[in-house]
Length: 117
Length: 105
Image (cartoon, rainbow over all chains, first blue to last red; front, side, top):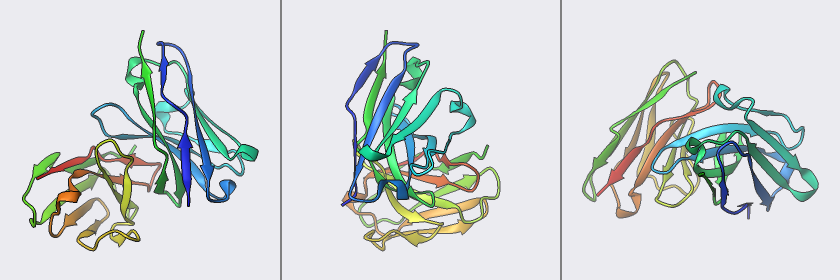
């Protein structure tokens, strides 16, 4: 079955960067886009962007452009999302999602990133 | 950017009640509208895609309708396991989630 296993919780200082990994199994990694979504404590869902694991192409909303980087290691079936210049407002659970035609069907378990001095 | 609004932001209903949630887009998004359910501490789950198509395995008490800018999500008979927050999501231009509707019993 499809599984997305994400890296563990992280605590970062303001101004630092964080890199979250998402290891896929149960399907052909390069056949489906990976999207990233975050959820701040007590808040709703916020989309960070998408990546095509086959081509490596990616995109993100204007809010995150220049601050988010999405990459992959195809031989490891793993996608990565790196967010830089962290502030307390970036404290959230970060999810990777396998998507098919923008349908967010398969979600990772989430990775908690806490930004605190 | 397309903005999504949902109403109500929260509601309380009894088991067996019909629950209706509305979602409005700031511009025409055609049929590019999905609905997700999120239970506390869990990842969201896709329930309905492209306005009214029920995801495989999702109970038929869930349904969706609408077009262009105005959409509706309905639970025909609320069950205890439906306690969750529900989000609409547009994907016509980039992608935006609605703010969510928390459903309680």
